[in-house]
Amino acid sequence: MVSFLRSRIHCTWLLLVLATGATFGLRAEGAVGLGAAAATLGIAYAKGRLVILNFMELRHAPLWLRLILEVWLLAVSATILTIYGVSRHP
Image (cartoon, rainbow, N blue to C red; front, side, top):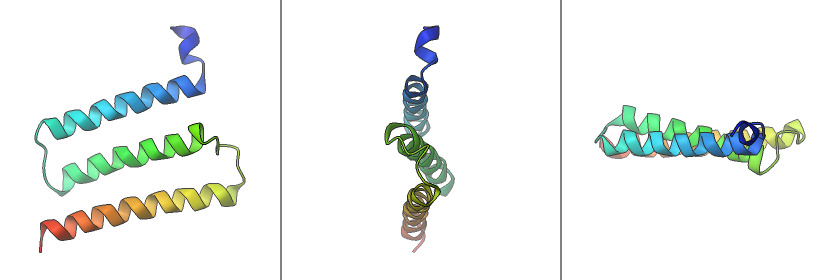
């Protein structure tokens, strides 16, 4: 088990599984509202960032490329949260 956790990819995979479980637990408990949506989206943002940096292997990519992907991920997350917030309160 210790050798499993020495690999960055394996640790990332484990974090993704735990984050998925946390998201499922949050939503399964019936959490509703903008706060629950923001928490769920925050976890999704963190998962997306882990995938971009570790599985797409952009951790050591040029700064401009990493910034493009980070800004894109942040823009998509903010857009989804904004649309959710607007649709809940017409």
